[in-house]
Length: 377
Ligand code: NAD
Image 1 (tube, helix red, strand yellow):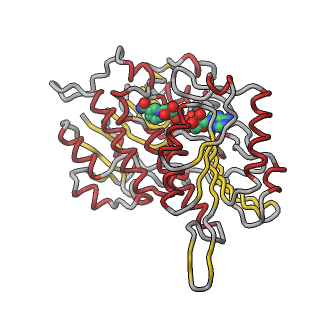
Image 2: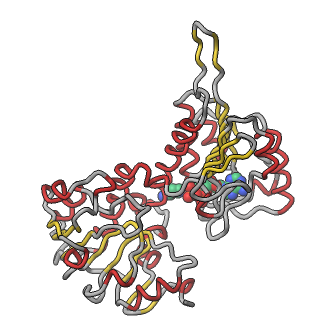
C-alpha cells in the first residue's frame, strides 16, 4: 500500500497532513509513504525530517502520487491535481463541500473516493479522528493570544510601584471546543472571564473553568441543544432577549472572542455595530466565525476592521497560524482514520462500506458523488 502526501496548493494553508511521527506509524501499518518535496515547509518540517522518518521525498506532486492508494491532504485537492492517479484513490482531507458541489463532482469524475474528515461522527470510537475538535482547540487558544497582542493594555492585574493596572475583562461568546479553550487561556493570562452560550450544558463547563456564565436562561434555552450536541437556531424572540443582555454586558468588556456556530447555517449575528460602538476605544473583538459570515456585524473576513477605536479581527485559518501544532494533531487524526481503512491481514486498503465512519465521511465513489446533500452540481 502506498500513501502520498502532496503540498497544499492553497497558498493560505501552511498546515501539512503528515508528520515524521505519523510517517513512522504508517510504515508500521505496512505502507510506503511518498511526500512531495517542500510539503512540510509551512509547518516547519523539512524534506530531510521526512526522509529520516522513512518517507520517500518526491520532487513533484505527480511523482508523489504515482501508484498511491491513499492521498492525505489538509484541504480538498482540485481534480486537476489527481491526473494520473490510480482509479479508486482514497483522498482524505477537510473537503469543505458546502457550496462547492461542482468541484466535488469533478473530483468524483477522477474516480477518487473522497473522505471528508469534518463529517467524522462525534462518537467515542472516532474521538481520535475528530479534526473539528483538534483544530478548534488551537483556534480558541490562538484567538486569545491574538487578542492579547492587539490589545494595548495588560491581561493580568499588575500591582507595581507605579500603581495598579486592572485585569482585562474578557467575554467569550459560544462555548464549544474553541470557546472552552479560549476561556481557559484567558484565565491563565489573568483576565476576568465571562462566557455565554445557548446550550444549558455549557453553564457548568464555564463555571468549572473559573469563569462566570451569562445567558438568557428561559424555556427555549433549556431545549437549545440537539441530540447531536449542537446548538439550534434560536427564535427571533430569544435573539432579541439575548441581544439586550449582550448589549449591556459588552459595553463593559475589553476583549470579546466569538466562536458561535450552528451546523449547516450561517453564523448567528450576536454583536451589532451599535454594540461595537458602545465599547471603549482600544477594545478588541476576535471573530472566529469570520469564515462562516461572522458573529459580529462589522467583521471583515481576513481583515482587521477598526470602528471607533475598537479592533475587530476577522482572522481566517487560525489553526494555520500555529501550523506545527495544528499539523501534528491533524496528522494524528488522519492516521487514526487510515488505520480503520487498512486490512490488518493483507496490509492493503480495504474500505468497509458498512462502517459508520466510512458512511458518514465518504462523499464520492466509483466516479459519482454519493452524499445526497452534494449531488446537484
Ligand atoms: P460549534 O463549533 O458548532 O459551535 C460553537 C458554540 O457556539 C457551540 O457551543 C454552540 O452552542 C454555540 N452557539 C451557537 N449558537 C449560539 C448563539 N446564538 N449564542 C451563543 N452561542 C451559540 O460547536 P463545537 O465546538 O463543534 O461543539 C459542539 C458540540 O459537540 C458540543 O456539545 C461539544 O461538547 C460536542 N463535542 C463532542 C465531541 C465528542 O463527543 N467526540 C467532541 C467535540 C465536541
